[in-house]
Image 1 (tube, rainbow, N blue to C red):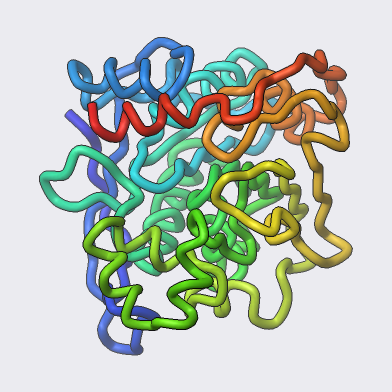
Image 2: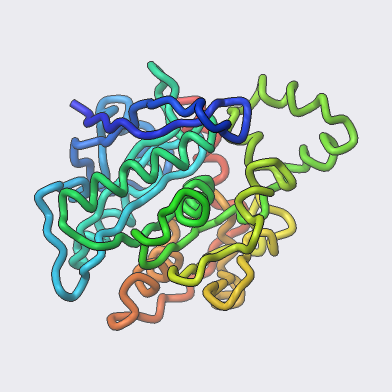
Length: 317
């Protein structure tokens, strides 16, 4: 059975108002599942194993080593899950010697996917899970790897919800740091604001809340992108399908490092959806978390658009 952890959640209409905080459960998957070739294979596996977690993760008996004193927390993206996004990266980090944990946040009761609901609430869920990991492992801090929305909700937890004292470093893969235009929807919606209501009929609440210029993204970056005690790294693509201009991925500040995939490997045209399944990106994540054992990734050509069809099929599987 999944583990439920009670964590703070905010009103779904927007920024939480003092005195209106309620508590909702976050789900911690505990059935170890094998690495998959991509999101479609992961989605097919989840049909038969809905409680799947990346292999070797969520072992609450794991004790961090001196070499890797901070457990790693994985935060998935929109309309996804810990297993869908981290079926490969999770076990890679376990094999590298880390204690690794991954939650399913932002789910609708009875829903089949996660990361679809109010992202102020999801940000608080990340914080509740971090507390659970720290209590179980005895560690003083964690490192966080967030993919897409997972990058935003985990950074909001660090910057706005008191998480900075509990996090050593944050890694954002395809991070919508300054929001995305959602396939060109946002510029149109800027001219016709009511379209955001229409868009919610065809997309999740969480997707709309991540649009460039939205109240959540504005609050997330108010007062600076980073806080001094945490190291921040973004890993992004110039051909990201969801975040345009791609410069919206980057963070500003002396604590931030911004890695651009095509600056490091020009022939790799991986975009938003394929990043967590791209071997080059996976190695960048491992190098960032474990720089003493960094390995130069193999630069291999990846065609533009790789992974998009898989994501579409997975969403309708």
